[in-house]
Image (cartoon, rainbow, N blue to C red; front, side, top):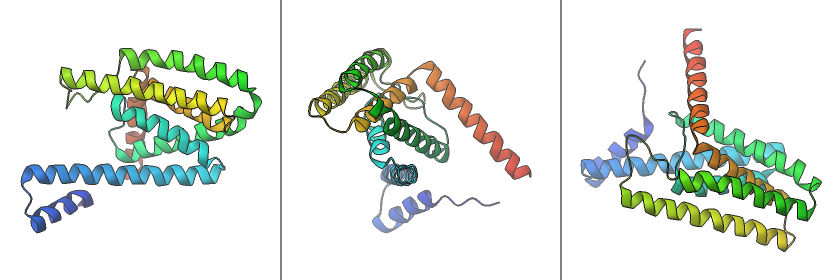
Length: 213
């Protein structure tokens, strides 16, 4: 069976028509992958949020986790499809749980929850971030820069939550942001990497069964 990689074909098309060098073609291919995967993930989150009637919280959790992930890295699936499905499930669960649970908290109770959750999540970002790829390890200077940015955006997100609570903004969005931060903090840990490996193996097994069946 011939497998056509549309993104590689698109990058090759750009190379031939724009006269790109091999290095420039690699950059173009990377940009195409980031754009396509990010767009697909956003569309899947939007559809899940609409289906579960929690679009705002689902997007809030995804934005919080995604922003921190840019600088802190973390466990990820080997397959873009598996990563997309996992992101969709996390966003849907975070969004729905936030919509259902946030109204049960008083403003002061949610304030305490945000602070306690932030205090616990801070430790993985402080001690583990950034978690880079073994295939593309970061230089020491780059690691320090990414760690600083991870912590900076972590605190900006927490301040945003506290400000939203002080202004009596949507409590479901505040809780969803916390869930997104907690999920990203978990992805930095050894347990987070173990879960990613387990999910990868599970999907690979299912794919082999489908091919054999």
